[in-house]
Amino acid sequence: MNRAAWLQDRRMQKFRDVLSRWEQRDLSMLEAAELLGMSERQFRRYRIRFDEEGEAGLLDRRLGRASARRIPADEVERMLRLYESHYRGWNVSHFHEHGQRDHKFYWGYTFTKAQLQLAGLVKRAAHRGAHRRKRERKPAEGMMLHQDGSRHTWLAGQSPLDLIVTMDDATSTTYSAFLVEEEGTASSFKGLLEVFSQHGLCCSLYTDRGSHYFVTPKAGGGVDKSCLTQVGRALERLGIEHIPAYSPEARGRSERMFGTLQDRLVKELQLAGITGIEAANRWIAEVYLPRHNARFAKPAAIPEKAFVAVADKTVLIETLCIEEERTVARDNTVAYAGLALQIGHCGPRAHYVKARVKVRAYADGTLGVFHGPLCIGRYDHEGRALAAPAVSSLAPCSMPSRRGLQTPAGPPPPSCRPAVTASARGARSIVRAGTKKRTSRPIK
Image 1 (tube, rainbow, N blue to C red):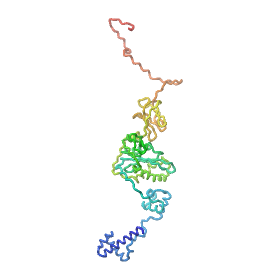
Image 2: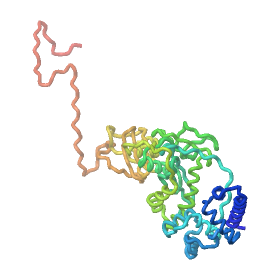
Image 3: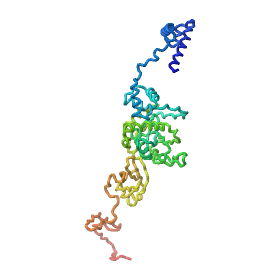
Image 4: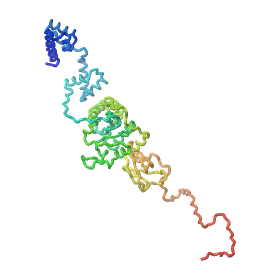
């Protein structure tokens, strides 16, 4: 017996019981109708139909009749063929969203799921067990950001890549997402620079204990916050709290988001026919992220945002970069990553030999050399100077001696300072009057 027949049988038993109590004068017609959940007029109609036709008159006449809103069989067949041909392996929610947007599905998600399960194209989900209690979200945007990477085969037919995602804890809004060959310091700086430049500085950043985020002296132990990595140094300089996560369950919000991305983004990239990393990153930023945030972002508890705007974007560029200290060699060059960066004439000094300088590697691949706050050189990714120095930073050791070359006139020799006892130039000697005659030769 199905549910509809069982409910019909229960309704008839209840009607007979209430009708017998009405016939015994225990209930009035109004009270009997209230017990059955109908009007007095409807109870009267049911009583007349029961007297004329018996229990058959109480059957719901809608049973066995096709609904006026029933979806045609050819539409159901079209949906099943579409799933088998283009969307095989997609989850029902993702398939239903594309069907409504691209294929004019006008029926609901529940009907789609039921038809796919009846056809054997989708398996029923297993019952979920007990889970941990979710941590409450931050009340405002910008109070906490999550950043993490997920290694997966994002592009069909290619090797696994890392997807770097920076999302908000309060709303689950994904601010930045891009593919890289391998997760590291440079990818972390790139994601933070994108978010901070567009939205401002956040209050805290929640990450795992990767080696580019924290220094962990003992495997599985606590992090050493006194020994900062490049990311830790930059966050401390910007005044942002860096919070480590000690288990995947602790950062469950970002882990669940990666599960959604691994299920949806791979299929979306394959459907769009994208196979290159650069094309995929442009498509993710321009097409996918707006759709993703419109579907999965939640409203914050309070409308105010905790982001702090940055007036000068140069501060972010000079902070969110790899910074290492070097000593200038005798030929006025700096060695960095196999490159010899030649320092030109800059500032009040003729050269910077033996000086301690800092080399900064930016997200776009360029390099900068700084002596304190002074930038003394900028270079491309191959070590070539972006702006040639106006004057050589090192004076020549000797004058040119090759014949045929004209020796440039050097500066005039400096005049010697006269002695204190010497007379001024051009002054006449003063004749001194006295009683004793002066000797013409010096006295011993």
